[in-house]
Image (cartoon, rainbow, N blue to C red; front, side, top):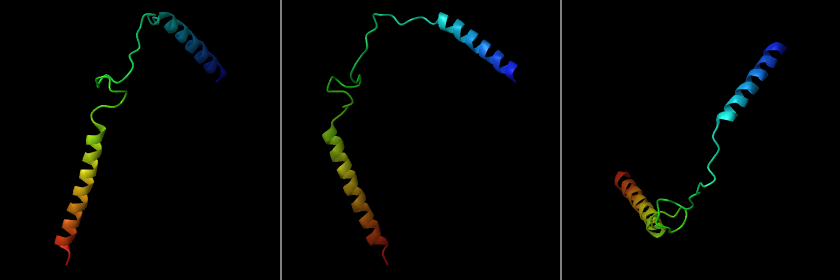
Length: 77
C-alpha cells in the first residue's frame, strides 16, 4: 500500500513537471474586453428595453388573471 502511494506521488509529480514546462505563457499584449458585446454601449448587461420588458410582464399577468377568471366562470356549476 505504501509502495503504491509513493509510486503514485512520483508519477504524478513527474507528469505535472513535464506538462507545466510545455504550457505556453499568455502574451503580454492581450487586451481584456469589457462590457456586453451584445449591446451598443448602453451598459453592461442591459440588452433591450427594460421598460418594455416590465410592461410585457405586467400584461402577461393581467392576461393570466383574466383567462383564469374566465375559465372559472365558464366551468362553475
